[in-house]
Amino acid sequence: MKVLVTGGSGIVGHYVINELIENNHEVVNADKVRWGTLSHSGTTTTARADKALEMRKSWGKLPTFFEVDVTDYGQVISSMEGCDGVIHLAACPSAEYYTEEFVFTTNTSSMWNICRAAEQLGIKNVLLGSSYNAIGAMGTAARWGSKEVKDPAYFPIDQHQGTRSEDPYSVAKWIGEQVGDAFARRSPEMSIGSMRFNGMWDDEKFKDLNKNPISDVWERCQGFWTYLHIKDAATACRMAVENPNWQGHEKFFLNAKDTMITVETMQAIKSVYPNVEIRHKIDGFNSPILIDLAKDKFGWEPKYSWRDEKFS
Image 1 (cartoon, rainbow, N blue to C red):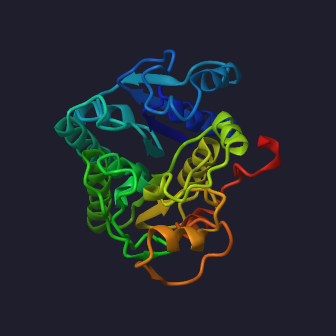
Image 2: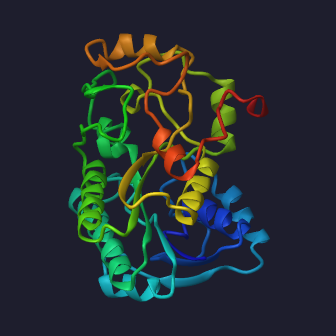
Image 3: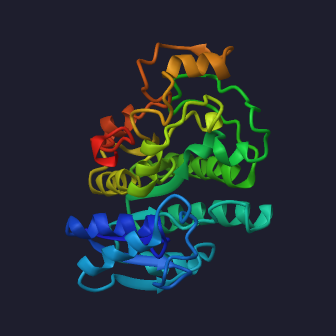
């Protein structure tokens, strides 16, 4: 199939494009940034640019590229013409280098443009690059103190959980998911998936965590101690766009099966979130965010854990 990937010039975009090409799909990259060194990518602190660049060697040639501003509807619909599916990754990655207003308007308007263009062109398979920050996680916690937390409604967290989001990036992801809901109501034959990415770590980050395990329950507790290998993220995108076994809009948490800490999950929750309702016990080091929906709808399960022997 022919798949449009917005933001394909970034690190995450490279992993997704590589996954698509390896599985014999045709790719169109729509991005404001042309093929380059990936220094602009918002993922450089969690995944190495040089490793992503190496992937290009196996592609034969670079995929078709259109320089596209995803906030411009005309550019979006023009770049999408002839495609069978869309994976929308382009976004302001945080408010660190942008004004809050720019982050919010860019990330929300682009979600609308993607869904609207797909609807007009009859493209039924649409994946929106969301985040676990949609419910309020590390992005929102950047505004808080190191041990400041705001309770979720319950554990384990599932796709029905509400939001604690406060910062423009997280709020925009939440609003973007409401856009997905709206298009599911008006065009119920579409399969729209909000991909709630989490962490986007590569092998080097996994090796570092393996060598320097975290025992402090307060470290990254606002993100519920969850994480994800960037290869697992790419696989999820490919599997979901290939075989969307749903209609309407679904919100998929994408994270590893386990946590990033050496404290068992129930003990960590008891220490940090003692007043939150526990709907059912979480065994061992299992993640407090459920990923069952992705398995149910398109067969995805994460392959990687920082505890794996290969990262020791």
